[in-house]
Amino acid sequence: MFTTEQPRKKMRITLLILGSLFSSCTFAGIYKCTDINGKTDYQAKPCGPEYKSLQINVKTGNSAELNPEKQKQDLEKKEQDEKLEKEQMLKKQAQLKQDAMSESAKNQFLIKNNPEKFSAFSIPPYVFDQLPDLVKEYQTRLPDIERSRRQAAEKALASGQCRRVEASELDAKSTKKALVFSVSCSSGKSFYFAEQELAK
Image (cartoon, rainbow, N blue to C red; front, side, top):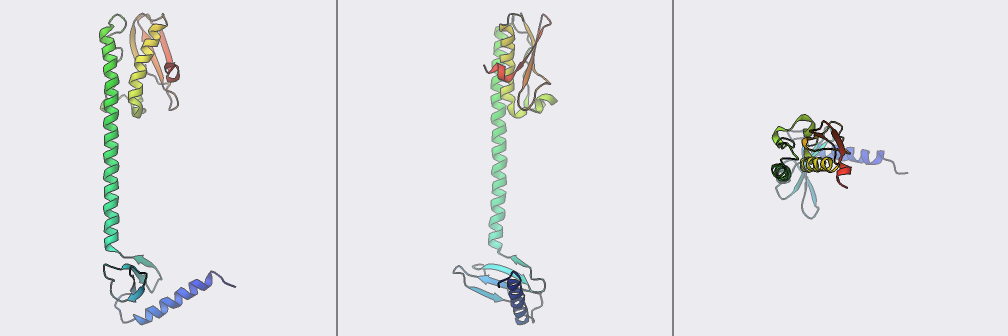
């Protein structure tokens, strides 16, 4: 019956034979060279660049693939992938900033054109590189936050119970699943809106 021990014994015998063949070598390793056709040779010196090379330590039985060209290619690919990933991240961040600035500009336009409904600092822009700790936690959604601050302020005014918006901010009640916005009015009344309410 075939057992898992048989292949191991066969490998040990092969290594012993190869070890004796190359016993005159000053190192405890030999090279397994395989060409593009799959033909394999064992030798004491490193394989040529056209071969797939494997160094075998006849003392331990361990082996290590030695293909400088492939290793170089793998390293170059890894560096290219890392560079591409960094470029994509920077591009995504730049787009995020641009979208947030666009929403902030809409907020300021609304405030400027409706001074009787909004105090001058009711929706101050959240600057990406200087975000408050609470907002920083949700910075990947900054454009949504800026848009929702405007929508929350407008919803509070539409209720008829808020004559003038003094502040519209992201609230500490926010979670990953639902952002919450608080609106403070000149009358002293406050409103709280979950982003799902604002989407209606």
